[in-house]
Image (cartoon, rainbow, N blue to C red; front, side, top):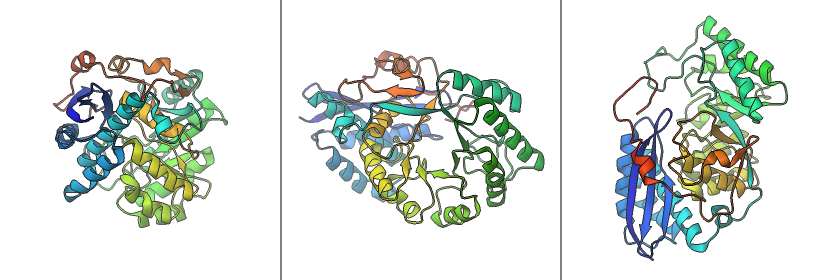
Length: 388
């Protein structure tokens, strides 16, 4: 069996473009994957096309060999960023293809299932109303009513990812903004009650002083984790923050840590209780499984980052099924209405009472619907609230 072609699509998502791809073979077998990242999705799209061309003629069943070849061949341009997103999507599609060839779900290829019902937490549930306690509380109640038992949000009133657009250059918060962040968070806690996981996101957009101060203040709300109090550049900085943030507040990082090599210093410095690698960035499902095994050795839990497209959701769930140290998986509570039309088995039929229920179908259990993807092409011009 040989790979004959790789096709890539850029598809409009709710806040960013999805990069979806499909691998074809000379036997008619195919596999689907996702390489989504942002801002800069056109770069990821072009990288995925280029990396796809590099695997033409290879045996798709040699999944680890292809991953290693691509990682080593492309290391000269850096082991992270767009090239690793492309590798991640290829790895996902190869695993899906292998599962379909062998007639077995991806979780079986990853070692077999510890569970087939994947506990989710909701993100992007706060899309209505304003940045105030009442509106956040009302929307949080809807998450609980839908059967979820955990949610995540950024209460700091500065959610633009583009530096300098709507936040000061020193990443600070005024006293009023600090008070508002706490009031919004407390309103959410009061709305969902004590037996509910609340994850606080900072997007690494607070300076050291404010990040520590807000962690100390939010500790009173029994938050489940405090996410990315600093960026991925320095494990030493994260370690220093760990020493000043209350011990009862778990730190979660990993969405911008690529591959097992990238998480090694974080684990060795015992910085976090939970890690959230992103399957479309970290190296794909094969690499996420290896990362989870490393985490297990340090008694760290896996909670995949996943504000992406439908293939990311499914592939992450297959890894979560196959590891003992799984905690929760991120899930976009509100999404574009065509999310379930670009795949041939809707995700909405798999999610019940806050769990994603994996099927017995081979591979990831779905195929891409080309016409639906092409009906919603990726956004290429800047527009409000969308990160190209």
